[in-house]
Amino acid sequence: MPKNSFVTCPHCGGETVPKEKVLLDGWTRRGTVLVCAFCGGELPSAESPEATAPAADRKTSALAALLGSEVPEAVKLTASAEERRFCRDCRYYIKHPFLSRCERRQAEVNPMDDCPDFALPDPPAPDATPNH
Ligand SMILES: [Zn+2]
Image (cartoon, helix red, strand yellow):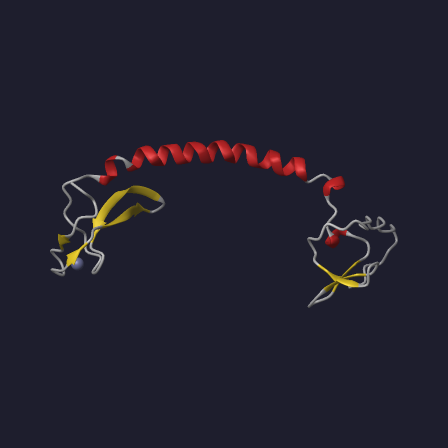
């Protein structure tokens, strides 16, 4: 039975194409039902779309679990101090409320720019008073 065939909705009586709707129980996916595209009423279905859904869910969560275990490691590898050459981390970067400037180039810059003139700021002196 083709999924996109027109059916007569028992709720509004219109000729409608069934839409798949995911049933949720809290955060748990319970399955899918076919609903009317016009009134949203649940349609009686001879086929069972939920028969194929759990398999797809398992595949997706397995992939997510695999990616989830690898993502933190990748982030850790790229976040070394040598790799960070963004203007926002530069000693010449001046942050203003509406624009950011480079003191060295005397020009407007983007905080995430990768600058050839990048210079790490001096470590703050132990007796420096924060000037907020
Ligand atoms: Zn309807």
